[in-house]
Length: 199
Image (cartoon, rainbow, N blue to C red; front, side, top):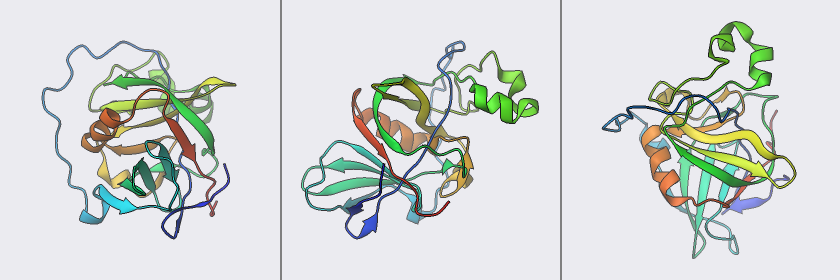
């Protein structure tokens, strides 16, 4: 998906994601969501966007580590995210094909091939929970051609990964912010992951 000027003078970009659908469900989800020590400039904020942007879509800018949930009247909620490492990012247009609370996680075949020593022990999956790589919530990205792309927007318990290229392709928000976004985004929502300007 080619970049366009989307956020009032800020060029929008991308984010990518990975993970599986299988593994046991979480038997006992945490009763309380912990709060995270996130710098003030990385907290969600309401921002103006380019005129004519369609409301109620997700747009991810990898160069600015920003995810935008578009709203009416040319406004959006901006969240700071961590994105995929170089070479593991996939730009494009997707839709939310599934949503899961405290999702289980299974490493993708690509992850097992790249780092078998790290991911091999999880090949049968990991139940959901705070230490699960998908965190508190996950939005599963699909295309009409492929169905599930194994790209995700998901939670994390590690704020140090925000504003960085750290993942196997997934875009991540801290868990409490991911819960907030998850509650807003319905199934079939359009998601655009823009091409990065830098590799």
